[in-house]
Length: 150
Image (spheres, rainbow, N blue to C red):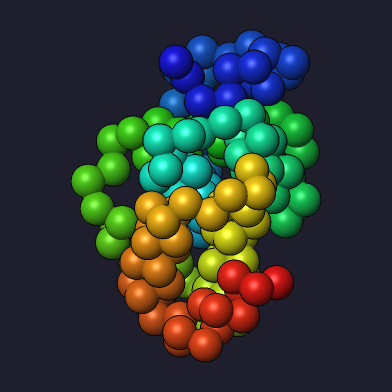
């Protein structure tokens, strides 16, 4: 089952070949892709990856990354592929560490909590995934807690 099938079907259909041609080069090393991969990881961490979480990821990407609908759809599709291929969180957190200031890293953690809270249940595996990502981003524990309580 492909990520966001129900949501993406509302937009223009796209093949994997089109995705690779259109966005792999443009998004490959961007923090937007890294952030989406991490949001998908948090959503999948509790074995209950539902439509509410999928909608939240789509909403965060569209509203915070200054992308149009097609770009958002392409970004999410690529992030889903990359998440499925992911071996280590470090590959993605290192991209954020290289490119972002501390305030931006805190914002990424807020996005992760938004995804975890989307279904109104914080699972221990979601909490653990966000904690691990926060540690890899060198986000202080007090800021991790503040983001959780927002």
